[in-house]
Every structure is written in C-alpha cells, then in structure tokens.
Length: 279
Image 1 (cartoon, one colour):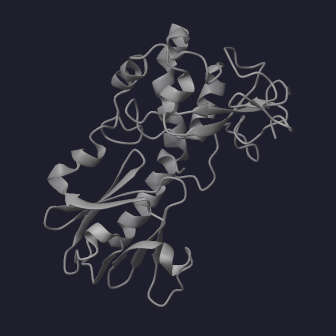
Image 2 (cartoon, rainbow, N blue to C red):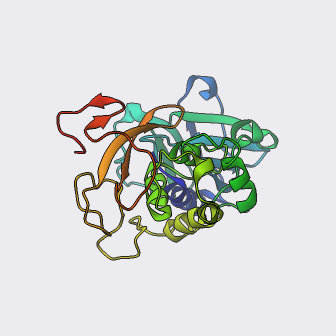
Image 3 (cartoon, rainbow, N blue to C red):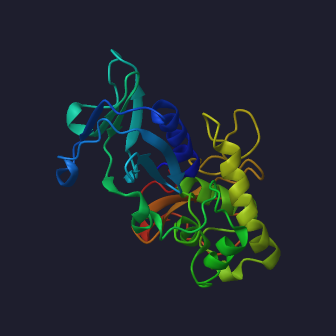
C-alpha cells in the first residue's frame, strides 16, 4: 500500500498536470458517478490528506480517491500510449488540453461536495506531511490505548496519517523496540521522540524516487524486506512475522537483538508454523 510519501508524490504530479486548467474530458467509471460530467470546470488543486487524494474542482466539488494496495494515477501527454494497465482497470479519466490523468484500479473513488470533505477524511489524525501536523496531538492519540501494540497503533490512520507498513517497521527499529511492544510500555524518552522521528522520515522521503531510512547509499532500509538477511547494525538475521492493523495481517520485520520487547516465536507467522521461517 502506498504510504504518505508516495501519495504526496502522486498528488504533486496530479497537481502539476491539472491545477489551473479546464477539464476537456471527464469519465468516472464507477456506477454511482458514471453520469457525472466535469468537463468545462477548472481543477483548483490536488491535495494529499494522509493516504487520500483530494482533487478539488470548480463549483465546490472534490474527487476523492485512495490507492490502497495497487491503485495508481498516471499522467499522459496527447498521443502518448497509456501503459498503466488494461482498459477494464481504468476507474477515472480527467483530461485537459495538454495532459490526461488516468486512475487505474482505484478502490475508492467518489465525487462529493468540497464542504463535505470531512465525511471522507475527517476521521484522520494529524497528517505527517500536512499543514495540520501536530506532534503533541499525534502522541496523545497513540497513547490513548496503552495496551495496543506499537505497530498497530502506528498503522491506525486515526492516530496519525501517512504511516504504512514500511515506515512502521523502520520506525520501530529506530526506536529499538519490537512492533508488538504495548505502546504504553514504550520508555517515556522514546515515546517523546516518536512523532518527530515519524515526521522526519516521511518528510525526508517525500521527494525521493527511492525510499531511504538509513541515510546510506545502496542500503535503503534497515529491516523491511530483509528477512533472513543480516541486520545492518548487529548482523543478526532479520526476522519476519505477521501483525494485524485492524483490517488485515501485514508482513512485519524486526531485529531480535537490536529491538527489545515481545515478538512471535521463531518459525511462525500469525501463530502458524512455517516450513521456511522468515523467508
């Protein structure tokens, strides 16, 4: 699933292609909005809100979309071949005189009144890359349920908006605790660092084509995607297990030496024995 930095990049591309221009083509391929016609209206701006994209259009309208696991917005020039996927995966087309934005595999696409945007994104916590970022409120949200595992709390967009599974794993590594540690047991000094560290990581990556949390060239991530490979700090093999976020289980990576706290037993994923642990 795209995380806050990736959504920010997608939004900037859409804004650069559409903002201030009149729509000459409009095609929303979802039953509820299939008859909506936005042609002749000017796109005012495209704004990210956590992992959500808000395309604001003249006349008090907002096209709300979410990429989830494999959705994407692609930008094309006139005559350029569309390469985002087969035609049946297209959910939205917004065209101007010189650019066409095509939304592929968008699981969330709705047209709503701009004044009612809160209906779509009002539940979100402070946006790590947004003007509403408030580290104190984010920390208070996270600590509201002290028994909740840290990794689950970080993925809950109601606490703070923009963190996904990659940043979850990397943040926990940098804090030196496992994602299964109850957040209320996080030492106070590390808890105080949590909001600023999270915001710093996303902000550092919002303009990067390749995500990097280590600051080292060619060694982009500390633990994510590195199951069975040596920890970059202590050389212990990185482990892998599943952790839920309230909606689905997610592969979660950690170093059993550099990170303290509870963790699943070796060789299990989601409580089930695996034939090839941590691969």
